[in-house]
Length: 231
Image (cartoon, rainbow, N blue to C red; front, side, top):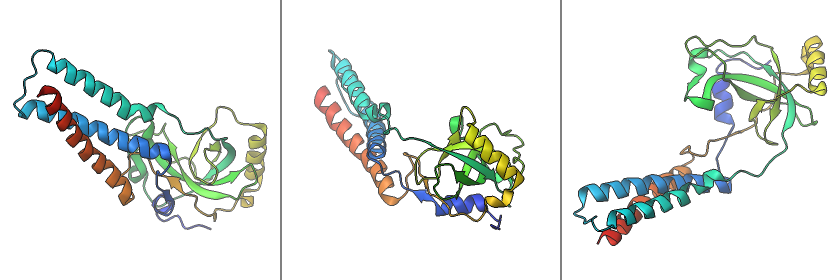
């Protein structure tokens, strides 16, 4: 039996893979360049003695819009499609209070973190991970009943990210019925699969360097371009 002490924290710390795909790098650097170019442009216009008459203002504006579109272009791209793996997950208990585990980031990232043990239906080994319950009450979040069985899908082979499915397949329903009758067939003591960090997270160190370095580069480049165009 897996100890329930700080299980969400344990899974989060043990299973963290950097956002190191090519598109992750492009999005992180592109966003940093965009932020730096905006800061550099506004700062230069406000504090430098520039002549933005005779159409210079519009030239600067058009150039910066083009730069912004190029920098943010990676967000219009998509990761290569991956075939999701149907799974059945069972909720686990943890000593961490629901208030500790409620994520207040807003939007799709807001909800209650709940530990689960997962049985993939493609024959791969069972694993432990975390799910985000978005329908939890922010004012008074409550855990689902420990041992609840859920039909989900594993988004990427070898990774712990899980998501909802539109419909429960017949195979998933059979496994849910079987585990309801024989819960010991799915042991809680399964290895932890890693969760991939978000693209904009500054960990590990090189991700932070990419972010702050691209901001600095954007500031310097925008200052030089604005001074050149308005000179």
